[in-house]
Length: 306
Ligand SMILES: N[C@@H](CC(=O)c1ccccc1NC=O)C(=O)O
Image (tube, rainbow, N blue to C red):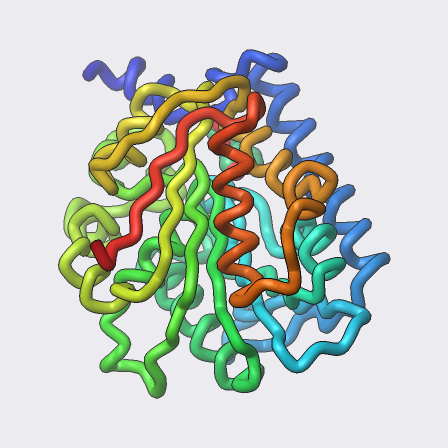
């Protein structure tokens, strides 16, 4: 593929059918900011909790007002091509979740040019270890990532934990519009601030780490979702990562796919919170929602235990 076409394929904003490229990014950032403000007003928060020594190694915790013995926790890893966005606008997911008694953690990491790919992957891995150490009483840990955040979440699932102090048990992961093979972006504008070499791209590509993923995350339920109006390259990234495809619904793009997922009115009201494990149910309900919804398009669902 020519460089120009490859760059178009890896420009999600140019594939939205709702608005122009510039407008869809502006609207996306606005939706994330407003959602995060709302989350901070409805939940108790612990902001800027360190999970490491570095300045950027901090996370925000959104805590439900209701007390429960059976607490589930979702870690959200934001997207933005490893060079945009931050945890400051990544608490939006907490709006419907804290309402159901679920703790939400928005992880910060050092985006490029400050951070590089190896550092970002190491940071999100360490953030998970830290969350488990601080919240040892939780009954289930779940991961959700969008875009570059889905890549980072997939790297967490593919970790050889023998080099860490603990082995996290992640019950479920929801990977939305992710990139799982970094090689195609090496020659594009996306790599300008990242400055990845081929070697760096290979060792940080979940598509090259599937054996480790199977070893480390055999009991994790993984749901991979991609927007109908993601580019063919983005859709291929999801398809090839799991080689399992289901069917098409309609009407999302790279940005609305995650914006709509946090709308509690849509799916989380249907959650039967009496059933355990709560969040696994919830993630399954979200996937059921995607499956039937006119909003989301294509869902790939696998359980790597199979
Ligand atoms: N150049 C990219 C920019 C992009 O993807 C993006 C920009 C700002 C905030 C988030 C983004 N992407 C995913 O979360 C695009 O064309 O969409």
